[in-house]
Structure formats: structure tokens, C-alpha cells
Image (cartoon, rainbow, N blue to C red; front, side, top):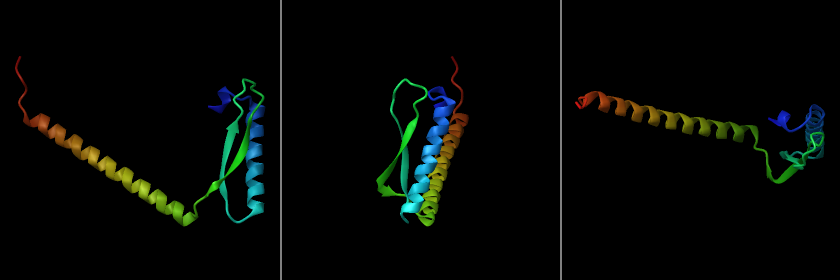
Length: 102
């Protein structure tokens, strides 16, 4: 989607800036933070985006990320099972009722 708004050079510069910011962040300390790309919203296709470190929340550890992923997966599967059970019940109810004659 960025290709519609940025030129190829702007996309490359943006990616390099993000990689540079992540490398600086790794060298500075043991606590990694989220990095966001902010565009200036100007109509110039050459102008890219610049990275900003969000130091209000740190990245989760590998164990926390695995627990979050597992919880999300279980919620998604439970929602899908509820949907399938409800759909199956509707299909059985429709099959049990005789068709209306008009």
C-alpha cells in the first residue's frame, strides 16, 4: 500500500531509517521498545517517513509473546466452534420444518 503514496526511493529510505533506529536501540540498552513509522502527510512522493521509539511500553519477552499468541489462538478457535455449532443448529432446524406452501 505504501507504493501508492511513496516513491521507491522514499520506501527504501524509510526502511533504512527503521533498520538504523532498531540497531541503535539494540546497542543502547537491554529493554527493547516498539518503533512506529510516522509520515509527514505531505503530497511529495519523495518524502518518506521517520521512525519514533515508543518508550511508554516495552516489547514482550518471548515467553509473554508465546502466552499471548496461545490465548489469542484459543479465543479464535472457541469463537469458530460457537459459530459452527450455531450454524449447524440452524441448518437442522430448517431441515426439520416442512416447507411452506404458497
